Each structure stands twice: as structure tokens, then as C-alpha cells.
Length: 231
Image 1 (cartoon, rainbow, N blue to C red):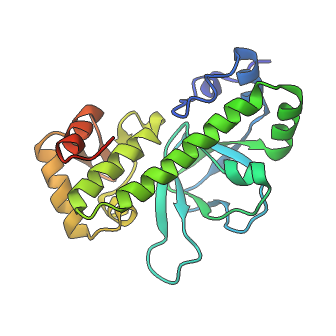
Image 2: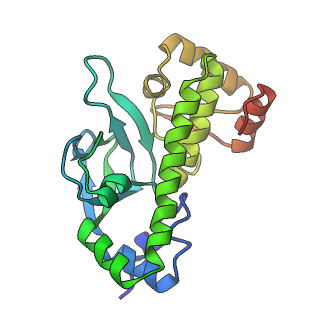
């Protein structure tokens, strides 16, 4: 039995599902259980035992640091189609971060048992899964890269570029407030306002209530290349 149309149409910014044969892709999606989370509800906590992997159908999922003392804990946010929890699911080690619904969200969960079964019966499953893990690691390195940029405006542009890539199902409309973006970028609200005003003037970003739109990602690329940032 094929999965429902919503699952079949799930965005795949990591490219791992679309690399699978159609029948295996449908089997992966069929095995996923559906979870609904209201804004602020926990998907999993740091130090939880590894369970499986999760992807977002709609809404937003937030990573939070929990071992830091005080201050804002929001670390990063992902959008529809991005998969999370993969490293712990493979290694069996406890979770490292809290995963929280940043907006009312619909989530799919592929259990660790299903991952083991698919790995044992389908030799083409594991290479695709490792491709997904490599995308997670690439995104993590990209976070470190934009955090190393001193200029707050350039850092914001690099962050927006990555957020747009890790939220393919948002279609350029990022469900983030300006304050949330400032927290992720680790800059002040004043610095964020200055950056976004510049981007808005140049039509790189469109500002909305509780969201930011990136109508043309090529413009962010152009801005960063003009600043001699390697993409």
C-alpha cells in the first residue's frame, strides 16, 4: 500500500529519499508514524535514549542547547522535509540537543527498529541514509562557518541562506520572527534590524509578521559573493 499523497509529496531538500527506488521510498514513508506537536512541545530531550529519525511535514522544528547556563537556548531551526535525529539513531548514543516544535507542527517518525529492518533487507537503504547524515553534518559545519563571521550583516545573510536550504518545504517563506533570527545568529536585535532593513531595501528579504521571506535565493548568493564569502 502506498503512503498518502501528503507523504508522497514531502519535500526532500536532503535528496536522500529521491535517491531511493520508488518502492523503497514508499516503504520508508509507509513505516513512518505521524505525530502532531503544538508550539513549544518537546519532540525529544537531550540525553534521551536514541529512538529514530524525524522529519517535518508542516511547521517548524527547533534545536535547543540545554547544557548552557542561562541565556537563550535556541540554536537552529529546520523546515519541512529536513530530517533530524539521524546521528543518535545510527550510533545508539543519547541525544545531544532538545528538539522542540517551534510552531504547531506535523512530524513523521521512522523508528530505530524500522531503520534496522530496512538496513538488513535492503542494501540500497544504508547508502541513502548515509547521504542524509552527510547533509546533516554539512549543515552543522555551515552553522559553525556563519558563526565565525564577525560582520553581523554578512553573518545574517549566511544564516538566512542556510535556513532557506534546510527548510525546503517553506518555499522561501521562513517561519521565523526577527527576534528568533537574531538569537540564532547570536547578534543583537539592533544589529538584526539594521541587516534586515538593508536586505529589505535591496529586495533580498521580505519582512512579514512572524516570518521572513527569501523571494530569490540567488540574491543572497550574490550578496555573499560580493562580500568575498565562499559558497
